[in-house]
Amino acid sequence: MSALLPLGLAFLMVVVGLKLTFGGLAAVVRPPRALLAGLAVQILVLPVLAFGLARAFALPEHLSTGLMLVAAAPGGITSNYVALLARADVALSTAMTLVTNLVACLSMPLVLALAGVPLAIGAPVAALARISIAMFAVTALPLLLGLWLKRARPGWVARFERPLDVASQLVFAAIVLATFAQNWQAMTGYAAAAGPAVVLLNLGGIGAALAAGALLRLPRPQGRAIAIETGLQNVALTIFVATTLMGHGELALVGLVYAVVMNLTALGLIAAPRLRR
Image: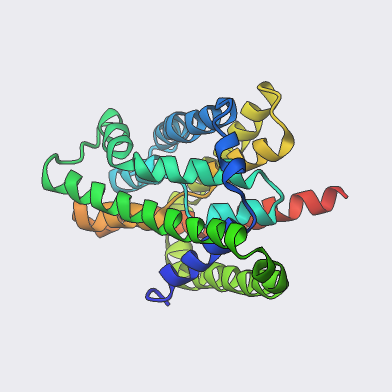
């Protein structure tokens, strides 16, 4: 499954690209108020919330560090497809994912250092830069393919739109189920120790995003997109940093628990607009 995951994510991003236009993406930065608000919540508010929760629950050092790793991570790639299913602003969600993954090589070490968890400089940061660029590419290249197909082959896109939608839903369901299966042991093993802080981090981040959208009087789809981006973190990057750059596999345990929790809340965010009807 791990070998198929990048292909599945790439396919989902192609489908997302088919639903967007170059003009729609460009409109996100004209004006950039919603984008800047979303980035502020994800890059600033979420780590502060994680720091407070780690202290409030008096988490052991490895769980506290793991919680900060999750909060410092960029947006997860599946968030763009979740935004599509949740009838959120997909262009805003995509822009946030691209920006946060691209700047992760700077934002993650800075957040961790401010929290008292310095990431060694030099080769580890260079490795983080490489994986950040790779994550950006996994998001951007399939997205550009989808955007190009929609512009260059509109007839083909219209003809296969329904089969692609069904296939993408099946791929997304497979990714979610695989996440549950792979991480359930960590979830049950560390639910008591890390579960409350993880759940509050996820729900608190989503709540802060919705509150920011309401305060700024953003359209509801934009507020929902910021909430989805804040709630769905790039757990794969968290695990990479914990195991490869920091050399402590136990630091990834919180990320594994978060992966289960964030997929559950993602399903709730997808269902919420449908329940209002």
